[in-house]
Amino acid sequence: MGISFSLLLIAVGAILRFAVSADASGIDLQTVGVILMIVGAIGAVLSLIFWASWGGFHRSVVNTTTTAAPASGYTNVQPGSVTRTVDETRTQY
Image (cartoon, rainbow, N blue to C red; front, side, top):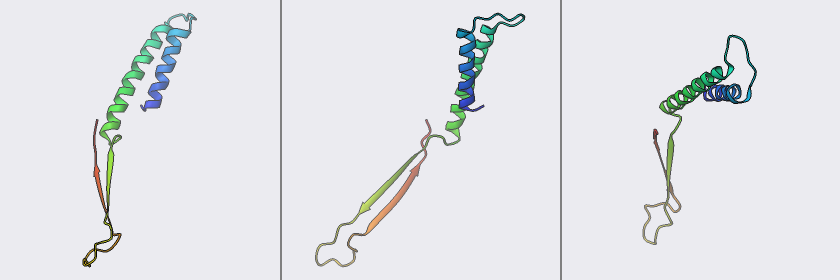
């Protein structure tokens, strides 16, 4: 059950609970609405937990260093050389 299906269950449950005033024999529509809202909320929480454990939240850090032209007398550094270091760290919340 994905997050969108959970939100759909919550919406349908809220409609049945608060907006429908019809009576059906053998079934209480308000109770069905409450049950759908509870199942949708549990599904949404579980979807967020599993999404986070599968790498849904992560952060990438890119550090870039540029070296300026060297002073006169230094020949071992290329003018305008660029060093790029990519450091990816995964942060779970």
